[in-house]
Image (cartoon, rainbow, N blue to C red):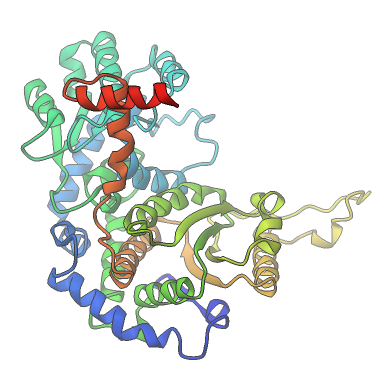
Length: 450
């Protein structure tokens, strides 16, 4: 079976000859530091060999819990934020029917995502939608006190118990949380919920292949064994002993940093399949939260083509030349649709009659890449044979290991996120949370003086 592959030729041409190869020593040192646990943040390296450590027995436990939820729920709400939901949503959206929200699919429950915002209208509309539904909840939070998720889970827990009774609710509320500590663990133990552990040494944005991602994906009816198998094969393809020129993650880390040194400060993740929108959202968190530190880091952005060619295309073609693109290209779609002929041909498109729609899409992709390269935008291309569980598993691990290597080359700690706490402190102070009295007084005095 083929692996996903990386083509850097339309990016390396913007660099001096040998510029990518010149990063080989730094990349090897960075990957060695990951393997030996000597890099900053080395207490969060549990993801590195996670795929190869996953056992059939563990996957069986995940699938058994998912079956219970699938058999007893019309809707499963996944409560989580950031890494606690983006990876699962990326896979589910990529594999699911684009119109699943309109289709009455009796085989699979509807998967909703909540706990990732504090929108009153959103939460109110969700609770209204759930009023006549047999629903369950997967509460994903290491601490159980993350504001967005904790607020949402309290609403869902109360509603589920009111609609189904406490005994039945216990069977369809699952906690994915810390092994021993935190409010979510205390609640799960007290209520008797089925629970799974978020490993201490795996950060949220690297947690797709833990129960954080695997349980919702299994609930949606997708093959987590194939997902893990893909990640396992990519783990081998990006191993420390794979030659630099053959290691796609090493090449990706090297050319990203080479382009960054040349003033390319923004990486735009491009897809030509609407199903990949949330894969880009997951990627943005993975790289933004990992590399954006110490006043350094490539800014991760994303576009959905060809849609955004009619909005962002102008800026990409002729705006400031501080960008490069990474294109995820799906070689073969899962469905086949031929473009029809029309006798009147008022739109002038009969020259496309009989062609697959994907052929038109592929020519749009190639034409855009050529135009952007001509316009001064380096282009990387990640080729994915099919959009299925196996290759999504490969893509996930490729981006994870590439991120770990790249962050170490950049000389930041890729595994912490100190900047995320700033807004929380201000929010808690403004809400008069107990324990924040001094901060509350200071911020209110500041606001009054402005």
